[in-house]
Picture 1 (cartoon, rainbow, N blue to C red):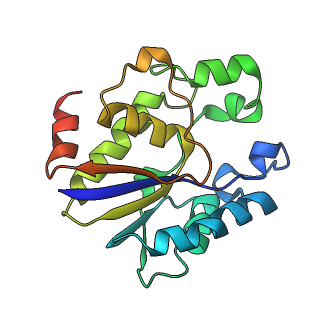
Picture 2: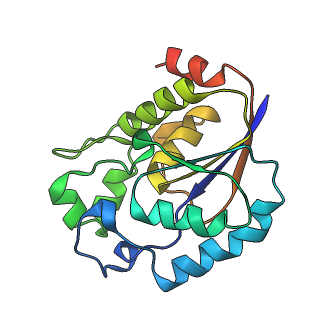
Length: 185
């Protein structure tokens, strides 16, 4: 049995509608930097053995700041990247209808992924990386919400809303649980 911590990156400039560049290059806002910095002391007290990080800049920046008191290398994991929303949805991300659609478990925007697609990608990856280590993951709101929905056996019909920025979400997970989740799809 291992403990896993899931952390959504700190507030990003895209969340403030202040970023028009590539999604993977979106940096943290000044508040996001403060949020990540405020995690450093609590994270330092955890029995973490491994750090897994999305390759997107905002997740890497959060991980660097939040784990600065630890002496663990960061393993970038491509399959923990943000859910692909397609160009049209990415450009209009903050509209109420867009957010409602993106919170739907099986809604797949044109050229993008559903929450289920992204969560399945992440669970498949975590099953392959499972080794019994206590692990902290720095990734993105909806993909983490999807993973936690599956892990906690919640009803996705209620909506899948992003995990809050820079909040430690802890789960104790039995060895083999990620593989069990895969078999349930």
